[in-house]
Image (tube, rainbow, N blue to C red; front, side, top):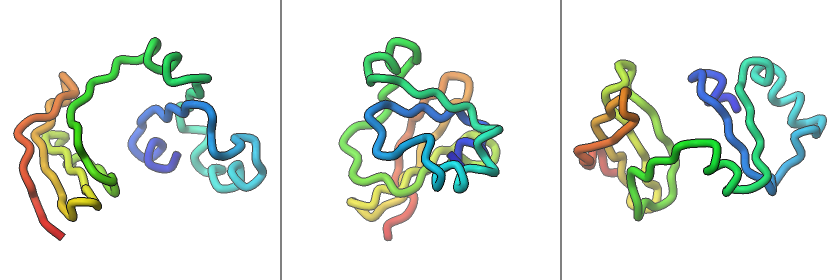
Length: 107
């Protein structure tokens, strides 16, 4: 929720959720963000996919740890914990597409 709020992104959640959106603790944790996050909850993956466009841009990734865009929105970085690497892609903001994958850093 915090990431979506800070980046102006939409937050899409698909049931079943592993938490209760009405829980007192969740409301307290999200207090600073809930008013500005655009939240949409779907009953199923099928419902989500019927209302949204989904582009598969990469397969065979390990465990995602971090993903960020460069300040100028021309690069996308993805940390793959399984491989111990930070991957860099060229990012086309208009198309929402990734290209030219390369290993940026090995950890």
